[in-house]
Length: 242
Image (tube, rainbow, N blue to C red; front, top):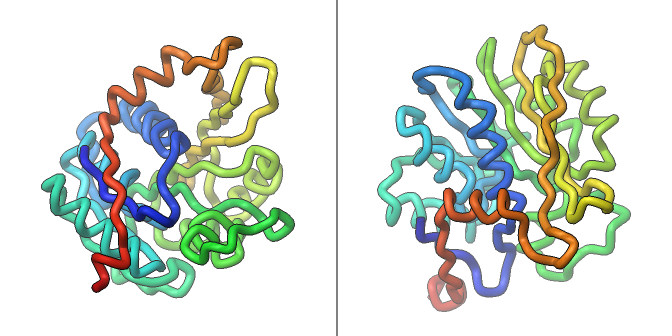
């Protein structure tokens, strides 16, 4: 999958590839996955496009607040021959005429106390000022179908708040998986699979471990990169806009 990304802006990273694998693990247990898919904060489009490529009966929708990423999401869907419907603007302000069966997101999750980038594009994509955790989860619950599935990743240190908010809006967390840089390092990211109106007990999956003690990628991580098979092309957006 070829993906255009901004030369001087926010670019996807390994979190998205691992979240994609987590989503596959959650959906593979169901037969004949179909219906509507929404990627909140699509960025370059990578997450929604990967999921739509893997589960071809899903109808892809993307939501993006930034003009630069709206353009790139649409361009990347076109060059990869995956149909999409783009919803431009903040998900928090958006009204839909339907609900979605599956919602996925790699949202901005750095909080206000973290030193921010001066690049406005990166700032919006990484920091949760424009989409606070509680608002994000509450909105998602409203636009999910009755048994809809919700997959996202977030700062692992906020797991307690995530569980509390999901419970308040009738989203039952069915599975979580942590991401650790190394075996002896604390988790940095948590991946969440929640289902609306579910009563299932939560499963704690074995964690992703990025690197071995020698600093090399673990084989599981390399296998995920191969499965995703993404190729990034950096674009000078000033030239595109001109």
